[in-house]
Length: 138
View 1: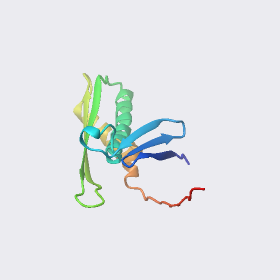
View 2: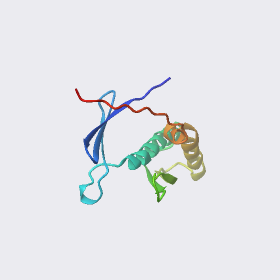
View 3: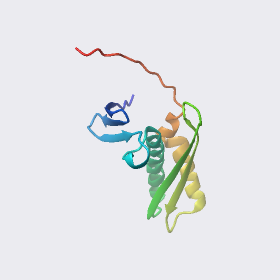
View 4: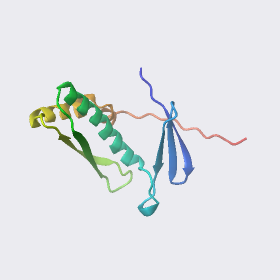
């Protein structure tokens, strides 16, 4: 089993820092407007989904010996109006700049990347278990 772990710590009421086991850090905030400096948890979810899909897509295109001059994904999530404000739908728009790739092969690669290989996309279907613990200061 391949296990991943992070530790999330509160910086302030609306700011958090996530650190993985090798010390890589991600800043998170829930501010709006001018105070916003980092992505929110829901934006990070879109970034994770796009990033995971991107890696697989680009590697598959290069495996097909296609020239990848530029690549980007625009991700948009439509959220529920109530609480919780979960994503009801997510739209990923893949854009490849390549002189030798065809539309049909790119569409097949994207379908495989999102539908079969992207761990984040598959994780959105996962069961989530949790525990809770109150720690009393000494």
